[in-house]
Length: 222
Ligand SMILES: NC(=O)CC[C@H](N)C(=O)O
Image (cartoon, rainbow, N blue to C red):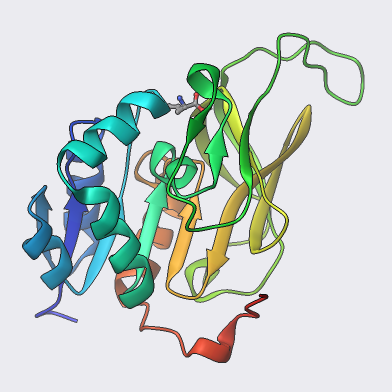
């Protein structure tokens, strides 16, 4: 692993420093490159697609840099981890900013929690969903290795992923949040592994150790 590289996609949408320093902490010699250069991203062994902010800005910044197509290519070629807004951008569309078309790499939509959210006991829940929440692992996956089921991860979001398939983890927050998705080379998480203590660092380490999966490892539906 020592000679491998990971590109952290820099498109002007935040939280790159904390992601990069967490990767350096667990990476054991992995070269961490924060970049917006398409050739560098396409040349890296694996790619992290992070993001904080609003989806309309996110899509505009990606397109302005030609990175929308780069992310599509990466998704087809090598291990990629989407984080928070980066995860949301992989879906078909988001309700944020009056509706935005996203990259359509994974099936599903990003929906608003709403202004009248309650847990099963009727207690009102604040939006954004901000803080620690348990994530139930719904499939076995190399990125969950060594992480106990129902471990807590740190979330900050007002919109949540609702996907028809490829769900790898769920969290409850008034609705069922699809907190992790997995499809072939792509793994995506709504929470912030770089802010989620040991479990989050373990997920990042697992990502850096994750070999390209064989195509048949996960079901691909047409
Ligand atoms: N923390 C964030 O950047 C949140 C991303 C997205 N705007 C949401 O609210 O779900």
